[in-house]
Length: 135
Image 1 (tube, helix red, strand yellow):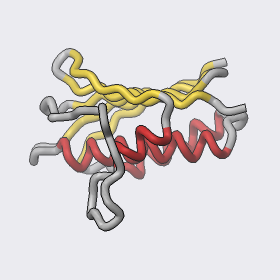
Image 2 (cartoon, one colour):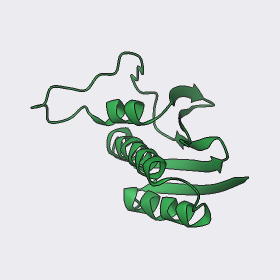
Image 3 (cartoon, rainbow, N blue to C red):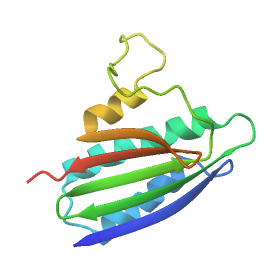
Image 4 (cartoon, helix red, strand yellow):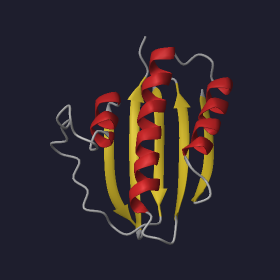
């Protein structure tokens, strides 16, 4: 079994609401995904997409493509964006102090997924998250 969705986010005017709508379509197509896996995966994806939309736009907008896949083994999202290379390090991500105003997004993504990767491929940022399905 494999169900896939592909979407393009042109921000602005698009925002994470578009991502929410497409993920909801994915859950309709794949009702066997547990509520726990849905919540964790969707939260991680929205945090990641929100970070890209918010931080990658240097004034001219940002274009993201997001490929979503559900298989018997897990849930995968690959996000590719048009922005410049960021100073991203995915090692040693920690939650900020409780009174911090920001900095939780990538730490949440890492905590909610089994795999979280970032690469620069063909002049684009490529992010991938994987959550293995729970039984």
